[in-house]
Length: 530
Image (cartoon, rainbow, N blue to C red):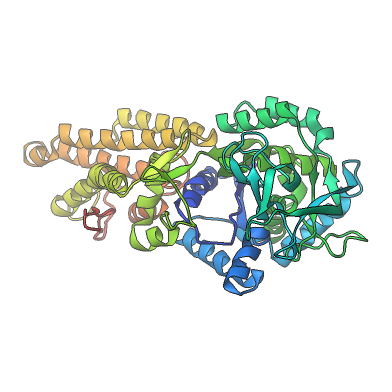
């Protein structure tokens, strides 16, 4: 049994989740469900990122505390993920006491390493707002591409920045030019880890192209040491004498959430945490492409610098962006589709199907209501739902709601076995769209099998052939439902329970003469008006 760690990116708890979050994080749930069906030891973790400037900004705007803001959106994330079937072993938050304790202990060890250095640096201060400005509160021109950007990370080229490096800096809240004073902070010496980071990149050709390209560029253009402490009021206290008024910078503690969350799952299960980060393991990190450097540069640097030999990332599942009707999603302009609205108004499997079948796996993907309706009506209703419904209706009408006695078609057995093998390999290697297509090709084959064997004719002309046909169609349905379970868990569970089969990732046999209670349709059409 292999230990599988699947870390879904920790979304900022400063606003409602939207379709971009769902599209980038959903592959993690597919992986977790697949590996559980294979019998592996799965640790699927994530949580809400409750610290950082975006939350304090929103708190100021709404005259509330950062804790109140983060808790509100943390609960909304939990609600949406549950409604859409995300099967986290633990979805926590960075403000949780267990995470805070783990991070402090990690940093205490980190500070003793040769990769931490105290430096005096420039710090932005707004004379009008009368406060220290973090990078996110400074806007200016990116020194790499010239685009207007915040001073933490350029939205256009992805460059990780510092406030003093941006051109023509301004306070993001009032537009005043900041004053740069001096402050002492702890720095992570990423430049000393260039060799190890390059080796990590070169030994993982399985990473997605965007992850390889972004990481290579960061290394080739020159790594920079990064401050891991900040003069902030909201965050985790720095566990070091003389730093009582400072906090751990958000990027140096949120990525450690994968460790803190999985550590607590290990405690619950009585599993050795070191084994999860040892040799008999495979680690996936699932996120959008804007988070690539934090998972291929920052997280490995922290793990290497800490010195305990923690396992480095194996697979980077980094999605491209989702646009809405051809335009970039903008929460500030309310140009977004909110996850809660989708979860409450549509079949969760319809949502899941769209964001795998048409998701941003290799390139940016566009969401439109017309395409969403088309995918639901033509694929889920027209192909899969149709195959299930016509078969079960036939059983009810002509076989007294019992699966008929029949002989298994060996050609179908070979096809099913091949799809289990090939689909599994594609899921493990991060090709979710291709895997789903394989399964739906099998469902399309099922419809053709039904049509070519004309059970509505053989029912009277050749009852034995009719029984064999319906038996084999049911056999196909049973196995397709297991194949689809990682992608479409709600509808698959209905069939798995109805046919009394296992959800293990292998060929399923069906019971002859099994009585099938009345069964409702899997999917409904979405009409234009809705």
